[in-house]
Image 1 (tube, rainbow, N blue to C red):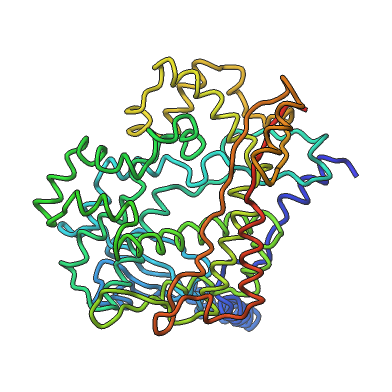
Image 2: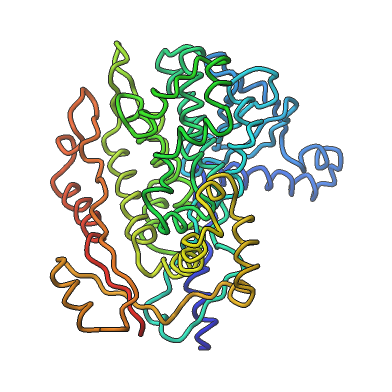
Length: 459
């Protein structure tokens, strides 16, 4: 078989149609279209035309006064939403509901977010930066990949608005008033507002100065949002900064909901294109993202837990697989490193500045790079000349670096990411006390598998 054709088959293998959907959706869909076919065969033209487009349900049917700006639309049936009020739809894979957000209200926190230019900049920033699907081991030495754009299309905007909407419903269900929630919804929506153009790929150019958490307050002040929101919603910038840095109860909650939102979107993107552990786990647990509905606050609202330990374990395992198969996989970093190497000299010379990166988007960055690197940016080619090796210790890493001499490109240390086994469940016990030793071992092994001292070198 031609290697290029084989590569496409391996990497772009379409997921089963059930992937990402509610397990009951296709039953309802197939039943609907069987009825349509029956009308057609019996020449019942009027019924055929009436049902052909699917049942229309007014979005107002899903209105909930607890969270009036966020509509939860069930995903277990095939129907069409008649959206007369104008909402933003967020598909929420692996969950029992999609989320529609009313942004047409003249007043309200979601309306304000939706109209904020600094927030909307995130629509031009890829959620996964320039990460790519890892190339299959058997093909990596003789198949070259050319990318016109980053392969993952979901954005930081999508992730951020989903984070805010989940937060609004969770707090509403746990007794927090609209007034109490408003400032927190702003914080959760804007927690990534200072992500640099190019995302994490560009952040590697200057990790400390381009960190989105550390630049959160600067960016809100830059656009005057701190004063505007303080006047309108009682927004406290000092408190907001602490939450964004995951301090305190709501910092802990942001850490949880942030992980839920990005894991859902990222794993749907990866699993839709490629078979692997991510796809397998989601197929076996199609409603794993309903973990957000398991968040329960204590009566005094000073802590929260998860009501379903098994679903929490499956979620954490899925997130660990994302790190293993994509986020911390060296084979996913080729284009990521390509972009970093182009931006670094321009950043060092001041051609591209920190302020520009924090106020512009991926499209602006690409235009700058095309101006300075017209040949290289004509198409982004994964640098096949780079290979990598992982070592357990810093000593082994340095020994190998000395051995390869001028073939050395760069080195990095990937530390262990949080397993989540300390997240609280049921009456407040950590998850590790509520699940089997076998499950604890599996999760810890996946987490540990990415840890190490990496060397990238020219082959």
